[in-house]
Image (cartoon, rainbow, N blue to C red):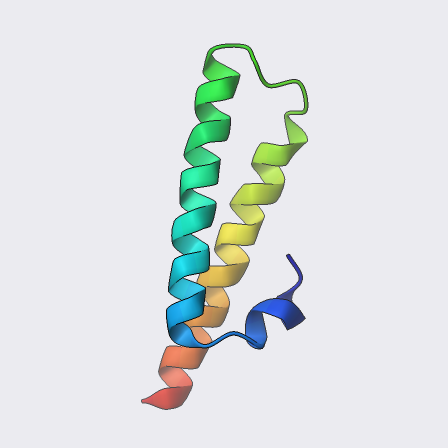
Length: 65
C-alpha cells in the first residue's frame, strides 16, 4: 500500500489497517513454516507495509497532540 493511500485515512482506519496487516503477516509466517508459501517476498512487503502504516499513524498522533 502506498503512503499516500495511508495518509488519506484517519487514525481509527490506520489502526485497523495495522491490525489487518499483522494478521496477514502472521498467516504468511505460518505458511512459510509449513512450506506452503511459494512467494517469500510477500513477507518482506507486508513487514514494510506495517512499518509504513505505523510511521504514518505516529505522525498523525503527534500532529494532533
